Length: 166
Ligand code: HEC
Image (cartoon, rainbow, N blue to C red; front, side):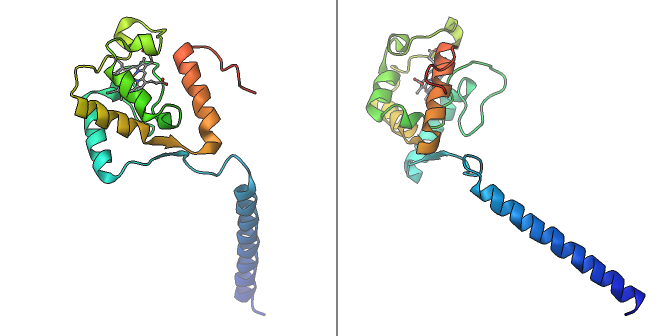
């Protein structure tokens, strides 16, 4: 065997070991429970509701205070609960009544100063409140992340650690 050939064989040998190692490492990770399950949030809205709902969402500036899909306005820093997965905690009827309430703090008490509290959307048309409620209700979370979502909501609403956390 010539010197050059030996070098090439050595390179192939090293590459095989690295590739096999990577494969074992990936398989190990895939089995690692709780880590590699992806993003738990999804929406059940059809494209029409998604378009109408996110249009209202932007027009009404919900994102000045709430996070959704990991995004929010960075100019305001209001500790409101994230809306990802909120449709698994509250149903459409509850949301419709909440958005229609003249005094939302009578429904969900606030620990924040007035400027940061959830505004009333009672002035919107019935159609708009229905669309908003249906859209927000469509923001679901996978079962395996439900408890985490509930915990995050509780901590944002109360400013206290979740009593159910283990
Ligand atoms: C000025 C900030 C602000 C804006 C704007 C705002 N919210 Fe809120 N929202 C809050 C806060 C803070 C809470 C928690 C209750 C409280 O402190 O009044 C809340 C609560 C909620 C809740 C109940 C959450 C729960 O876990 O019970 C929902 C749903 C919600 N908001 C949706 C919306 C939607 C949809 C919009 C836009 C139409 C919106 N909010 C606009 C601040 C805001």
